[in-house]
Length: 129
Image (cartoon, rainbow, N blue to C red):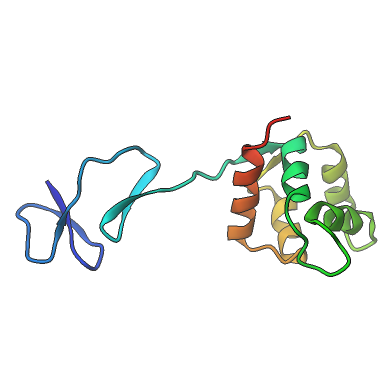
């Protein structure tokens, strides 16, 4: 039986004072954290064009003058600041890959961290037309 101590270290063998028994894992989407199984939402690696745009539409902008992130991205893509290849990807891609160079290059320009991108992709994956 595995046990975890207060430092989060897991070991097999006899239970030591202060350790908690780790019960059977509920699913592959659960991790043992602070004495309990916690559901971890997997980050999708691809979302459709519609899902990506809808997720941005549902997300408030972080910059003044825009009502949502989709408006912000559309304005940015129309500007001279964006690489022509990124603009082409934005207008023509049928799906967006979480780790694509375009997404990685645009995220910091929009003030998005890796965690922000993960949340946008998770939200996008849950949207159906």
